[in-house]
Length: 164
Image 1 (cartoon, rainbow, N blue to C red):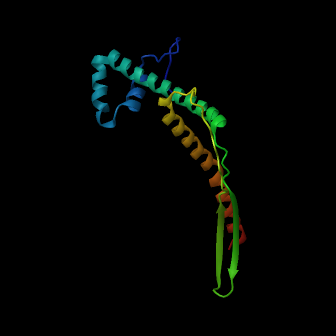
Image 2 (image 1 turned 30 degrees about the vertical axis):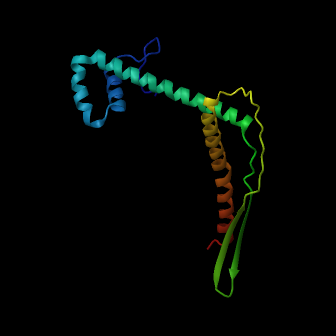
Image 3 (image 1 turned 90 degrees about the horizontal axis):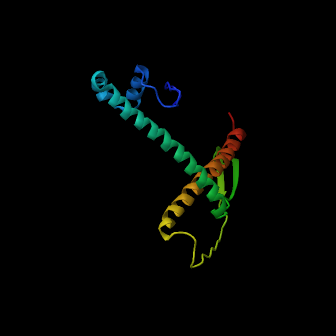
C-alpha cells in the first residue's frame, strides 16, 4: 500500500507510475493492455476510477480490522468458557509384534452451560444470527490457536521418544 506516490493532501497523485500500479493491481491481466491504451485518451477518468477503487479497498480493510478487534473484545465478554480437554501421548514397544505403538489421547471434558436471557433483551432479534455466527467464528479461531498447538506438542513428544 505504501508504494504509491501521494500528494501534500495525502491523496494519490496522478503520475504515470501510480496509474501503472493501479492498473496492475485492479485490472485483470487480459484487459490491462487495452486499459493502458485507453489511458492516453482518458487518463483523468481512468485514474479517478482506479484511485476510488483503491481508496475503497483501503477503507474496507481498515473497517475489517476494526470489526475483527470489536468481535474479539465482545467475544471475551460473551464466550462460553469451554475447556479443550486434556492430552496424553504415549509410545510403547511391542516385543511380540516387534513394532512401535504410538497413541495420542485427547479427552474433551464434559461441559454444561445454562444461560438465561430476559424477555426484554437489549439485543435486536435481527442481530441474533450475526452474533451467534461471530461467537462461533471466534470460538473456532480460539480452538485452532489453543488445540492444534497442544496436539502438535504431544505429537512431537512421541517423535522425540523414538527418534531414529
